[in-house]
Length: 269
Image 1 (spheres, rainbow, N blue to C red):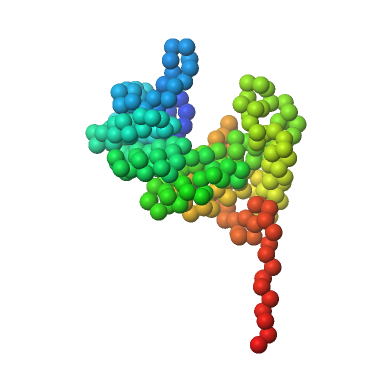
Image 2 (cartoon, rainbow, N blue to C red; image 1 turned 90 degrees about the vertical axis):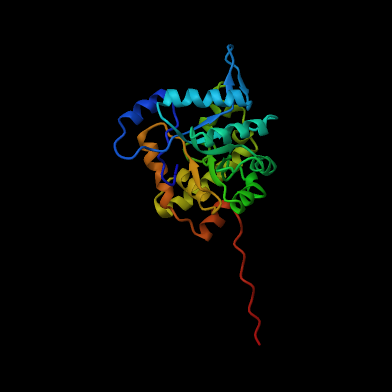
């Protein structure tokens, strides 16, 4: 699923509904989320109360014009985690959703949810410059059979190879990346150096840096799939190629900037 087989539609519900109506062949998987509500002033609030989750699910089913949502996910954990996850489990039992998952949960929150009902998948951020999930979250998911669908494997465009120092300097104030530490010094220089290593490895396979960055993410056996955004068909074609790009151990050492260790000398008998 996703970049392994990216047959998920992540866009406006009515656009998806229109596409599904005329979709040739088997219906693609449809994933959507709950737990974010907009008030009348346009502000976004996290909400995992049962009534809100049920209403969001029913609204999504109506807008998407489907009988069931394949994967229904929580956006963010809140103090109402147990109430929200209990309602997700009820929606699954009722057949309104096939599988239920979460996003941005840590290992303790996953354990808390699993006391109520099984978690099908977790959606966390993961990339070469965001590796926090490697220490606890990925091992927990791997050990407990929880699928991991990572987002931002190219770090919001930073690892694509198209983001230059000049382009970063021209980001408007309305672009959140202009305030992100990863797009500012001293981290910007470190990240651009990483892109050059991705470019050097990619040249061996005739692949762009962003594709190598995604392949690095997919190389982790605990990762099920990666969500990759695209603005046009050409970008989609570039991204999909990451699925069959097999990086060697030497490639990974080069990408991560590690020194290759010399083998231990063999002592004569």
